[in-house]
Image (cartoon, rainbow, N blue to C red):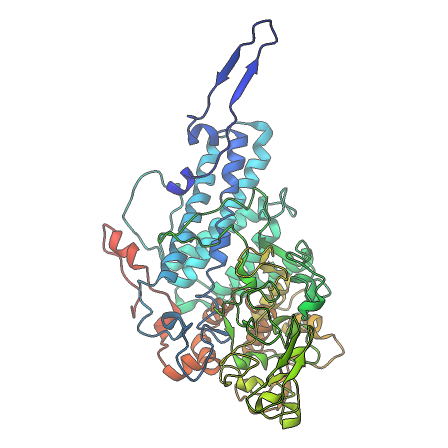
Length: 613
């Protein structure tokens, strides 16, 4: 495989120097050593085993297909006109969503690249004859089975029936055989069960797969198979019991941290009072079961240089999540422009107004972490004119210049509004129902959206995508909600008890067990201030779980899978996302993605396309 041939192997030039009276340089070049020879040694196989991890970086950063076009995020900044950032193919499920779009192609190609790397590790393990390495060898093979399962699970959820290569690719083969989804799930479960039996609870190198990671993925897989999409996954009600059982294993070994804020980069909302820097987070806590690493360690820092167009996915391999969500206030008063104070907010994923209304702003710690409520001046701005005909004011560094009001406390009088609209305040005040609809102001650009700043790392230079935050692919708080969902679907009560017990454990961590947890009674009626509790006091519903998963895992790449698994994609996307609801393109066939055009064109056999494409 071409990618494997590009793995950088540093071979030393070995020489000895005689200490006799006549110094003789004896050189032995091993630069012509083949991959087969090198990977047959324990040292070489260790290097090979590392190759299955770096591609998790670009794969986890392919967020357009998992975030936009759902009920949480949009690529658009304005809801009443066509925004320049709107990716119509994904955002609206319109006619542009075809087998030729780059996002579908990239998701397919990079997952299959990683599958082949994993297959190579598994296939070449048989060539290692080193008794001292045998135990480690078994662990490395188990890691490869975990990574292969992770990639196959992504692919089968997106595409349905897929090719399932299980051996290293050693020669060109253009025949494409789609394997039924049920067989793919059987293979995934077989690989993960084998991996669980071998993987250690704690990895030798932080970032490698562990027993907990295999158990967590098994919980996801069983839960998904239990829903049995289109009766094609081979699922049954027994899967829900297995999902709950594996979720209990994860919960027992990986307790949630007490403070949700410990999971993500630390920062102050006021950039003039910033005491934190890039990577300031407790990445190696008990709750994170498996994360994509963004350190400079060799295990994770071997990079893909470019995609097929020649454009780098990840620059130097850093985490770009600090800069891709909504916002962008570098032209607000008191901002010196393109600086590190708020970094560069590209607005690829903008929160929909109804999502704010899922939280209790007064008690839920996740609300302030997800949403920037106040934008601050970072330099003095004397003589600022809020609007034509309004007296100039002096803005000092540290002053608020834009405020996004809590959804349950909108500004309703001029006394509460900014001077740009004839009010009394020295800063612009924006209500949640105005997001994406506000007019141009001297305080902000038209159609400005607030930052979703959960992953924001202060102190990174403007335009730099090289964040150091280790992105969590699996957190044990999800295991609580997997167990709750499985019990709602018929699984027996678990170690913690009922579905409500598991569900409330996550809610109570965020809001406190004695505090209220009130969301909007109708999140999408932006004019209504009526509320309801989102703490479970009786039965738990799937919509309650989806609301809680939105609050808990916002931006973590799980949303499309959640909506697809539960069959709620169309219903909830139409309700929350004005592009989807207004244009009404979305149909049942959008529960699957199209098989990429390049895969069909290059195949020597006829490859069936998914219905509707």
